[in-house]
Amino acid sequence: MLATPEALRARLRAAWARNARDWLHGGGNWPLTCSTHPPTQAQAVANWPAFDAWLRQWRESPGAGEVERQTRDWPLLGAQTIPVRWRFSAPADVADALGEGRRWRVARARYDALVAQYAFCTALSRAVSRQFDLLADLPDAEFARLNDVLRWLHAHPDSGLYLRQLPIAGVHSKWIEPYRGVLAAWLATLRGADSTDGLYAVAGLRPMPDRIRLRVLDATLRARLGGVGDIEAPLEQLAALSLPVRCAFIVENLATGLAFGDLPGAIVFMARGYAVDAFAALPLLKGASVLYWGDLDTNGFAILDRLRVYLPQARSLLMDEATLLRFRELWVEEDKPALARDLPRLTADEADVCKKLRTRVYAGAVAQVRLEQERIAWDWAWRQIVRFVRD
Image 1 (tube, one colour):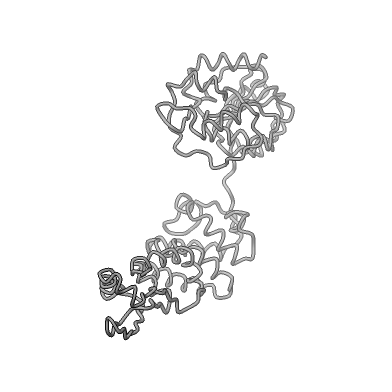
Image 2 (cartoon, rainbow, N blue to C red):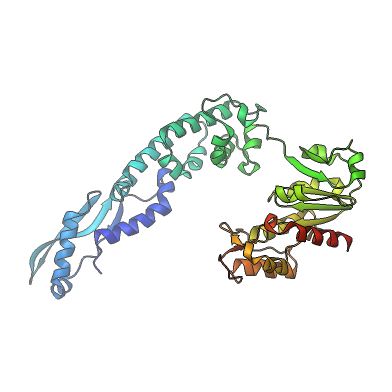
């Protein structure tokens, strides 16, 4: 079958997507050639209009690389000069053929500059090449700033500073956030460390303290704290807190935790999202009954499953099918369902509801159903909570 320039470009684009990073690092077998699958005389005679159109496309289209042609002396058609191969001597030629020339040259120049800057570390070239899109697309000012951050962090391996304290023009913690993984990988390569430890560990920075907010729902317990009932403190300070807690609620949203009334021997933690690993460090939860109440959506169940890694005794609260269906008029769309699908720590009933949510069994005003916990009528919810605790 005749291969048109457009068909070969599609194959080249697939090769580009797979290999551009490796090509940046010096990989690939060059020259790269693509056959045009030229016809025989019989095929050309059988469909002359298609053959003629194919020749015209090859005369007019390529614009990059080298089209190798051969002259065939055919008895019926005479001498015909036919394209037989499209040849590319280097990645830049492929990039030009695909309209990626500018991106390739920008990425190449930045790659070369970084590798030369840290020439003592030969392993860095591979780590840098993995970030082809970043090298190709980041605006000049942003790339210069990224390089400034890398240079400063490399020069000050154990500063002990917070991100916001870095004395680098135009840099703040929100700016760095999207590049944390890249910086961690590059710094780890420069230092022969493990990038999975995260940017703070690799760069010698001080992480912001993990602060946890809780409310004490029992006047007797509050009296042991000088009457303080709403606390937000670093994890290590809360870990030293000694309270005879009988029941601990963990709720996904802040408003829900603030709405709780008093309950004997109870506390409520709020607004932790997926960051539930911290609860394993709190001795006051060891002997307590733990109740988790999250949104009725796939993320709520994923958080519950994760919580049970650290607190296996945790039970769910108001995360059942009856509650979901009772408030169907309050359903909204879950626009970002949980990525994790294997949730082995859910009970059979919880897993059934989660599966139905994910497979869109609950048909309503929205397809991917989500019932936010704070939308549930509070007078009804509070009665269920009190009854649940008493039972």
